[in-house]
Image 1 (cartoon, rainbow, N blue to C red):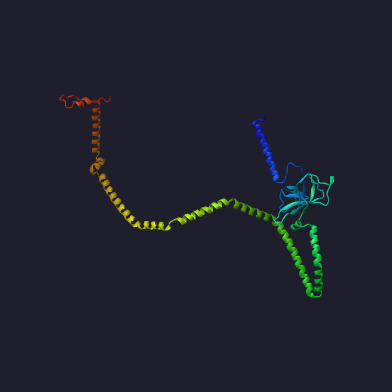
Image 2: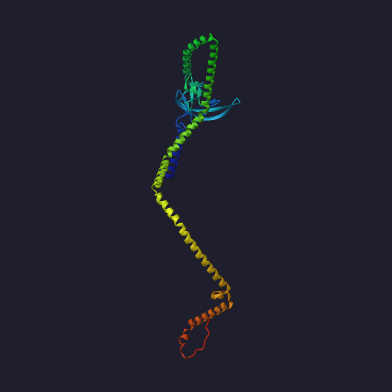
Length: 347
């Protein structure tokens, strides 16, 4: 049987392995399956990020695992590492194109090749593929489809243009009109090119805007309980305000204001009496300071204080003698006179 320490150690190892496997799996990489690494160099990647899917004919065969700068022949390039399933056969002359997966700026890497490979013709781990970059229109539409549409336009519009050209060439206005049409077409071409660049440059900002919008809606959704609590508190507060009898409160306030003059008169009378008492106390203290009355004499006459002190000492001696010799005072009515004996202080 395993000890508890061994069981805990095995549990920690298994949990760590599951956590690493889950993290890799979320990023799109299964560590339980073997893979090979292929490398592609680009002049620009238009905000391509790691964990971006790598596809062949729309089927995902791997992910972008690393992106870093690399100096190639004195020119700074961006090298992308592709983590491809080991069982996928890719020719060495295949091209890895960065394409847009939608108008909102999503990116993917698609591997394109003309024919399958066998044996030594297949790319091995560590090999490099050609790097290409496709615009938004090129990503949404294949070259064959685009050529087909342009051919249909040419076939349908060509006769019309030839007819108009033959009619316009017979007059000077026709030549000027053709020149204007050519200028319009050139402006339209320039506008579409500018729109394509704008979409590629703004793809990251659009992603950020959508992410911020999603974060805001998530915050509002998570705060619904708090918002409902605030609204219910506001309703309760307004209900309490409505239930208050404001007229009664105002009448009480008016009654208090009406009683204020009477209270002020009582306060003035109280202050007058307090002032009178203070004056009397001041006169009394003046008499005491001047030595008038018993208290004044007690405070100012030193002889009176001395006499009172001696009287207290004699009273202490009498009480002490009464305590020590009570028999003397029991025979006070007797005719026999007893000689006085001074008290013994040691008793």
